Length: 117
Image 1 (cartoon, rainbow, N blue to C red):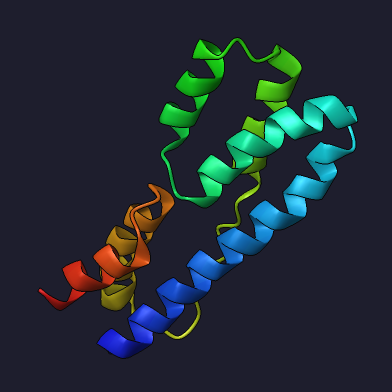
Image 2 (tube, rainbow, N blue to C red; image 1 turned 30 degrees about the horizontal axis):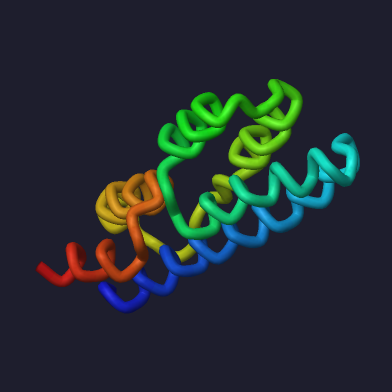
């Protein structure tokens, strides 16, 4: 059951990465090339799993234009929360704890380690 749960969680993590990549192209169309270059710096921070609040603070500190900030942060709202198939009600409750950890951008390896304790 642990391996099945981990596979489901890894799938959720991969889906979130795919959604981030898909939303990138939608957000990019509303920015100029110069603005896009600025936004890419902060997208890389998200890809490196730096917390949203830290990236937002960095953009504010750097004086980034509001439309760029909105475009970069809008990408995070696009994450999927698809229901999981194949888990019992009890397993689903357990898995939800770990899904929350992944949504908080805790690295998958750390979540997996926590699951084995």
